[in-house]
Length: 254
Image (cartoon, rainbow, N blue to C red; front, side, top):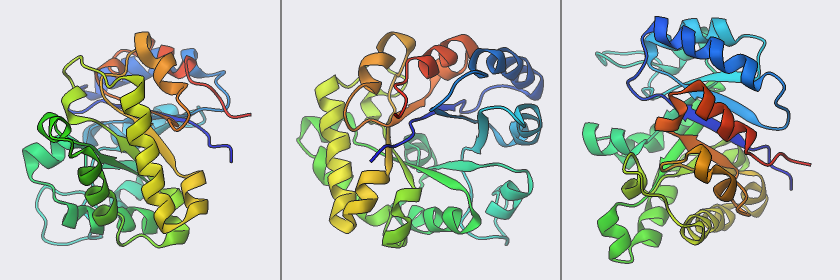
């Protein structure tokens, strides 16, 4: 089954509104003719509305970097799905390794957030992946199985294909290290097999991205792998030119 690839740029805590506007004005001409690839920028909360306004009518969609599972409540500092929907945000990154490691985000929280995003009509990008220690101890499969099973527990089988899964080996994020083609393909194929354990048709349709020091120099090889359906790009997404080069390197569906 053909899957439309997705290239998502995660800005993390970068870019004021002025910087974001300069970026998007540089990006849009470089990707305006792209066909067969979905493009998203995952921006800080303060950039959401201006980026939605500036990308309207373009191939670029705007995603948030986090959200709370509740629609409202006494959760100081949090943002809800209705707030994102009101801004015309199209999706949200959930469970990024930095959220897990630095801010204590748990699989229990994600088991609530992913279904809440789907129910609101947002595209969730669920991030999963192992640490360097876990890989060295041959615990990659165990970690991925636990995260996929726990984080998607509240998603009905017929909605699994609507979740985007991003495999990000934690040891390759911001380090310059990249999983080998074999490591990336093996892990992502394993994730697809885990989804198939729930629903085989969903496994054929679900998009699984690779995230971990993706750059223009390595994008073509990674994106050509059989089970890789795009990339969650960190540092290389902060420059419009390098992000556009990764988009251009993406094989499109037939």
